[in-house]
Length: 369
Image 1 (cartoon, rainbow, N blue to C red):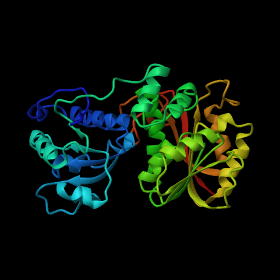
Image 2 (cartoon, one colour; image 1 turned 120 degrees about the vertical axis):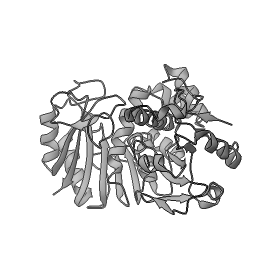
Image 3 (cartoon, rainbow, N blue to C red; image 1 turned 30 degrees about the horizontal axis):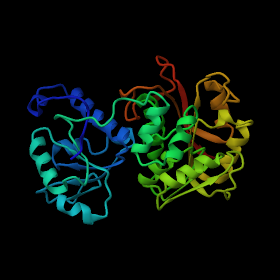
Image 4 (tube, rainbow, N blue to C red; image 1 turned 135 degrees about the vertical axis):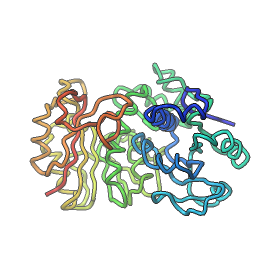
């Protein structure tokens, strides 16, 4: 039986006397573990107060979707819109999950034993407060470690070597081919965009290996089209991140070959700095997005020119380019780190008006006029 969780040991009874912030951090550590292991769809076991409090966050911050709640006795049919079922109904429910998370402070040991009886070796079981066994040490350190992690995740030898050899520009955050802090900073942009994804037709432009397109597809999108200029990325995405509601195709960001006003949401992260004409890219985004549609976009904060970047944009330049075709609703910044910075935003993301923090990445959400 594979049991995974954060490397913290605390008696559940002791948690009652801890500050509330510690409880939240422990749940968040478990969410980070889920994301690092590729457990993007989870079931919370336990239908009590603990689950009601943590039914949405911090899971969504980490790109993890609570598919259902498992409860042995409850007569409730849902908690905050998430279906509640008995453990013996999970396999027949069609609600595919990657792992079970025990969601209880006081009954964790009992629920863990029940989970073992119900699921045996068929699913990983994660503790929040109890004794865990981590699956991976933090972050691959080099080519061999990246290849080993990719092979362990079911990638072919050829694909693992390709991704390891191109890891300066290509990565798969669902596997964790970058150190955790780097992986998280990419995932959080997609979790920010996921708040607009429900039943949306989405273009993920410069989708890379497709992990973000798949994440949006799993979190309620009607359809996701992942576009990238690199055929190798599209081939990889099609092999490992295909869903019933995803498609992948080769296209340039400035000439997507999509129909006018054909999508509800565009995500494009770390893209425009790679292009010869960022304004032309923004014009193309406006062409394919329906009126009132949403753009979620990012670029490095005045990083300087590199072998890969044709432009180095300041906050003012980034805002000017996006505002040429869109009404900006939120100007945001992003830094690495696991602590929430501001309100309900994912960890590391904050308002650009927060002058106390210099962003590593510039983010914006905008609406087509």
